[in-house]
Structure formats: C-alpha cells, structure tokens
Image (tube, rainbow, N blue to C red; front, side, top):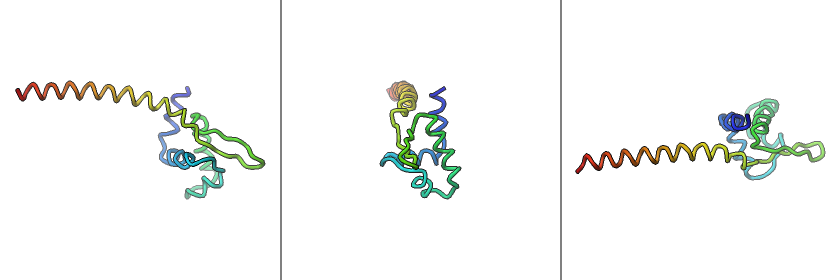
Amino acid sequence: MPDQMVFRAIADPTRRSIMVMLADGEQSLGQIASNYRMTRPAVTKHLKILEEGGLIRVRSQGRERLHRLQPEALQTVTDWLGFFSQFWDEKLEILKRAVEADDE
C-alpha cells in the first residue's frame, strides 16, 4: 500500500535528513553517504525505502545514480495531518466554549 510506504519512509530520522539534503538538488550515493557515519550499503537501504515510498526518484547518469526528492508524495502526510488538525481545532473550540461558559 503506497500510503503505508510513505509513512514508513518518513518514520526514520536518517531518511528525513536525507530528504532535507535532497531538497537542495540531486545527489549521488557518495555525496549522500559522506554525511553519515554508516556504510554505503546502509545508506542504500535508506534510499531504497525512500524510493519505495515515492519520496525520491533515481536516474542514471553514466555510471552514477542520482537521487532527487519527490515532495509530491508528502501530500499523503499533509492530508492525514490536516484531518487531525481539524479534529483538534474542533475539540479545542468546544473546550474554549466550556471554559468560557464556566466563567459566566
């Protein structure tokens, strides 16, 4: 299920930091891996999960694979958070009215 894959991808702080890095533009595995104290295969696993979630795209340029952010996939997260934001807005409004009614 694609939605689950997006949430799985953003659940990890390393993957979120990779997304922030890719917001500045395409980067190779070597460029990304140089920012972490982990093996290249470990970084590759993180990139694969981001790709499965639709959050990054990979293209080949010669022998290099370049990774770029696909922020459109975050719409799933935005929609989900928007639902709960509306929920809390309504609950807080009810609480506000109850507190103000008690003050009268």
